[in-house]
Structure formats: C-alpha cells, structure tokens
Length: 197
Image 1: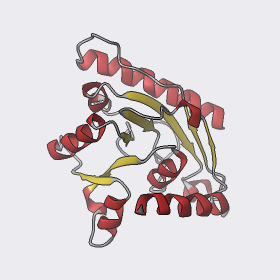
Image 2 (image 1 turned 180 degrees about the vertical axis):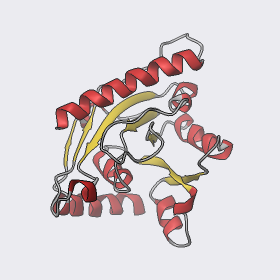
Image 3 (image 1 turned 60 degrees about the vertical axis):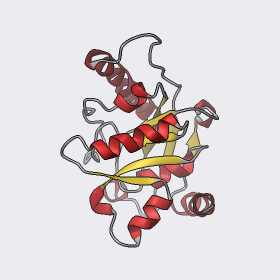
Image 4 (image 1 turned 90 degrees about the horizontal axis):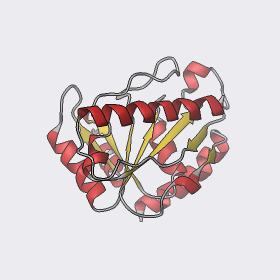
C-alpha cells in the first residue's frame, strides 16, 4: 500500500519537476522473475526507475543510506542494504529470494554512479543472480537525472526499457557465459543511451 501510494506521488512530482518521459514499458513482462539492468547517473535513479517500471521494483542500495527513519522508508519502497567492496552474501541471498518468488530486482551493473554520463565497465558477476534464478533481463537507460552535471534547473529526464534478454536454456552458468551476456547487456544499454541523446 505504502509503495503504491508513494509511486503515484512520485509519478506526479517527477512529471512536473523532472518532465519524466518513459518508453518501452511494453517490453516488461507482466509476471515472472525479472532483472532490470540500467546505467547509473545519480541518487535519483532508483526512484525514477521504480516509478517508470510497470511492476514493483526492489533495489540493492549501499548500506550507508540505511540511517534511522530514512532506512525504514527505503525498505518500505523495496530497497535493501548491501555492503560494498566485497561479496555481501546476505544481500546476494536476499536478491535471489526476490527473483525466486517471481519479483523484480533492479541492478546497476557498473556498481557506482558515472561522473561523466558515459557508461562505465560492468562489474563481473553483475548478472549472476539473474542466471541462478533464470530471470528475464531488461536493459534500461536513464538520461537527465545527473542534474548538477548537466547544469539545468528544469531537467528533462527520460527512461527507456529495451527488449528482453534471456539466459540460454540448458547451459551451465559460468564466468565465460556471464561475461558474454554482461558484454551484450552493456552494448544494449549503450544503444539505448544513443537513442536518448
């Protein structure tokens, strides 16, 4: 209930203040385990992506954001903490649980915000949870949320969702396959980014 009400409020606020435009939502499957993988420009990206998506989205967020009161709000909105700088087994398990119950997990494969607006290198194993849960992967791209860098008082934010990607059936999930799919994913995000410029 809290998530649904907050999403409605964000939708109105983002439409007015950020002039939010969303396309490609028809590519988001209505049900089943799903990973939405997007570029990352600013702290606005999670709420913007969650508002743009047609399903409830869960996010990994750095542990430092989960301070008293705000942390409870983030959790109610589908975020959960992750310790950066190493493999956080609890966060990985929580992410897998989300996918295995058929819900949506959003990830930022670069692992951190881009300071230039250009795509960075994806973290190894960014798609590992998607592979283990045999989740559909939707590449996504956000433009315009890096307001300070762009220097605009009234930004125009755009979100586009690309065509689904699937893990090959019957193939063992190993480092080589994950690298191949991660490279393809980043290429697709780069193509979406070109279309937003």
